[in-house]
Image (tube, rainbow, N blue to C red; front, side, top):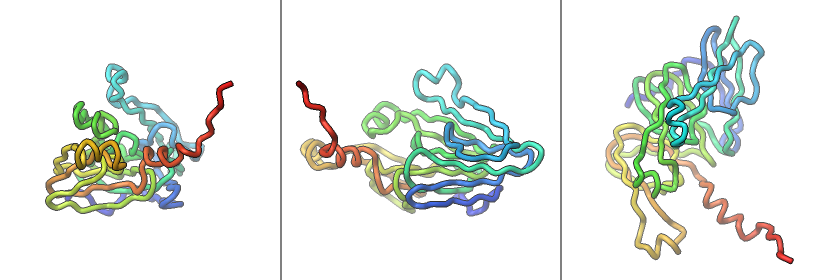
Length: 228
C-alpha cells in the first residue's frame, strides 16, 4: 500500500486525542498547504497566499476548496495549526497513493500532494448525510487530517460496515455503497441510519464521535423561550 511512516518535514502533534494541535517546521523556500482559517501561530517570515481549488465556476456547487499556502522566506519557519473540530489529528505520507477524505477533514499537506474534490453522486452523497463531495488527496508527500473525537485506523480485507457519520478517510481501491441498516422502522426509531459498506482491501479511518449524535444528546437540555 502506498503509505509510509516517513515525513519530508519535522512536525509534532500535541493534545491528542481531544484537541489535536499540529506544529510543522517548514524548510526555507518550501511551502505548506493549510486548511483555510486553521493557522493559529506562525513565524514572521511566513508569507501566505489563498488558493481556490476547483475554480470559481465550481464554487456555487460547494465543490471548491479554499487552501492557504504558507511559504518560508529567508530561512525556515514554524507554523501552528488548530483544526476547527475538537478531536484528534492523523498524519500519513503518500507515496504516489490516494486517500479520500470527508470534506471537513483536510488539515494540511505538502506542495506535491494534489488536493481536489470528487463528486460522490446524489445517491451516495445525499443519503450518507455528508457532503456530496469528497476530497481526493494524491501524489507524494505529507498529509494531515482531523476528526471529531479520537481516530481509529481499520485494516479492511474483504468487507466492513461503518456508520456514515463516523467515516473520516479511506484509501483508494476500496469500493463503497451507502445503504440503510435494518428496515424503515429501524431507520426512524433505532437511532441508527445509513451505513457505508466497504469492500476490497485498504484502510479506513473512523472518528469515535459524530456531530448529529451530540446534537441529539444536547437537545433535551436546550433553553426554550416561552411565548407570551
